[in-house]
Amino acid sequence: MKGKLIVFEGIEGAGKTTQMQRLIHWLQSSCFLKVRLVATREPGGTELGKGLRHLLLKQDPEELVSDRAELFMYAADRAQHVETFLKPELSKGTIVLCDRFTDSTIAYQGYGRNLNLNLIKQLNEIATGGLQSDLTLWLDINVEAGLARVKSRGECDRIEQADLKFHKRVQQGFAELAESNKSRIVRINGDRNEDEVAQEIQTIVSRKLEAWGYSNNPNAEK
Image (cartoon, rainbow, N blue to C red):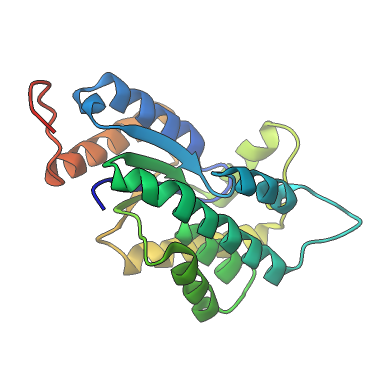
């Protein structure tokens, strides 16, 4: 793959979407603009995924989504996303910023729902064809603070409405993933103001881009 996949992860209310948008703006206004840049998300990064996202996140009292059905829908969304969007973009040399990827499934469905971790890893492998992020930025925030942010926005989706114990298990999952994947996952303290978090992310990404061979020299050829 010529391109690079940068993923944002974290619990509900961690600030992933906000920080990803800020990074996109910074990259577009910096000398790295010479590189093609796209943003996407899971679930919902394809037309098929948009339908799955609605089914996964809506709260339907008449038909509750079972834990295993939830897992397989996330896998279906990812398989479509990887084959029809991520791999084609990466093959063009694109830098792809993605809001959630495989670590979310391990944290939410594995730790949060207590589903078999080996099964989830196998499904992730099948869905991605072995594709991994080149860099994952984990926004680590206090669980209660994150949920308070979510509630302040108004109506919560099906995942956001899960109880506190669920979200704490998810947080534990991200922490253990970060500990065992230090070369790929970077912890960002999300319990700070938005500007401080954004500055740290810019510093980390800038260093990574230079290490990957992308120059911040506006006259350099890519």
